[in-house]
Amino acid sequence: MEFLQNVMNYILNDLGSAIFIPIIILILGLIVGVKFRNSIQSAITMGVAFTGMSIVIGFMVNAIGPASEALVLNTGIDLPIIDGGWTAAAAITWTWTYAMSSFAIMIGVNLVMLTFKWTKTLNIDFWNAWGKALTSFLVFTVTGNLGFAFIAAALQCVLELKLSDAFHKHIEDLTGIPLVSTTHFMTSAVVLLMPINWVMDKIPFFNKRYDVEGVKAKIGIFSENSVMGFVLGLALGFTSAYGVSGSLNLAIQVATAMVLLPLIAKMFMTALAPIADRMSEFTKTKFKDREIIIGLDWPILAGRAEVWTTMLLLVPVILLWAIVLPGNEILPVAGILNFSIAVSGLLLTGGNILRMFVMGLITTPVYLLGATWLAPILTDLSNQTGAIDGITEGQRVSWSSFEAPEFRILVSETFNGNWLAIAGSAVFVLMIIWTCKYMAKIAVPSKRYVEK
Image 1 (tube, rainbow, N blue to C red):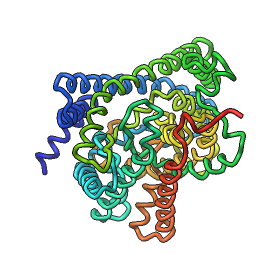
Image 2: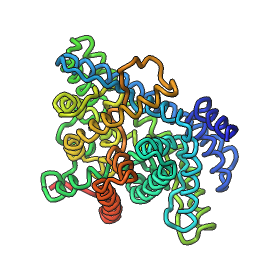
Image 3: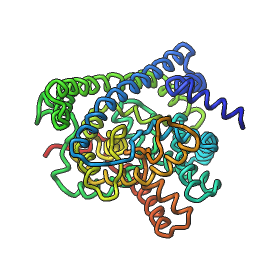
Image 4: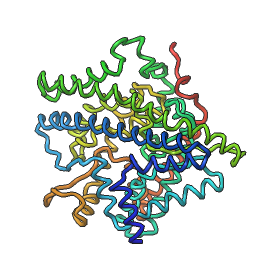
């Protein structure tokens, strides 16, 4: 067990996703018959794509975070919980004694489901095994039962794979990359978004094209990524009292990120195209009755401007909710960009920015209250293990855009015998089933809405 933990620590801490995922891509390419030279090229391109995307996303978050903090501090509101973002949550989670078990659970569930044809997704996003570990840790903390913790992680794996299957065709249409999907659990946000989306389906105003391509005719040059990013960054800068020079600098930083993101996203297509081609032929030969798709991390969708436009538009909304929401104690900084709402909204609506904004406007309180619930549990583990330096006595740390708060709270309380949570968990699963059926019926994003 200690040897395995040392190996995984080396992979996670020393190699990182930019090395580990390309290694998996290289092996997968060779298995399906891609030439060694092309497999190496695909693997390196994948590593460059992940590294580039990570740099630009970090650049964007580091630019927006201080601005959002300044905006709230100008109000004089006291929100004591420190927002460490997903990186702090991941670092703390990996210090849990049983965190490494998430790899075995993730691989085991995937193999069983592939064997019995319950999924067509081969999940190679091992980097996000920490999300399963976080769920296990929360259930273990609430119930004290390790068996329940592992069952909860396995359930999360099942839901991830089923959502990946449901969104596959839509992700292929949005990215242009064949035979890929995302197995990141942030897509479970569809449970919160589906009822809102269903209501908007009935309202003609929301059924026109409001993705970037659809609004170009309406706003012209302002739909360009660079101009849109500049305007949004400038507006945030002025509302944060940055002054002229500070606001202009923030505007250029956001515009830079908005331009670079789609360029880097194309590298995922370049890396995966040869493997996708061979994977299609390989599955036709080895699995004649089905196709196998590759499950990856969410950044394959990060090139869509609608994701970033929605998140930037929601920044003042999230901050306003943080100030006025009863029970909220966290100041959104590191987690100010809510990827769950933006990515899940993109998949549900095909990039309808208006719908995505309304969804975020309504559901943001769930994430803030979830983050407040998470704070004492995450802080206690950090204090026990020394995962994060600098947390003084009385301080708490959390993650303001805490992914899947409804699932993680419900499943923790379900195993704790809370009958209300048991009912809520049943509703959650039914909502996932509803979403999967909905996605199977609707057209792919590019054909979903028409101008009237």
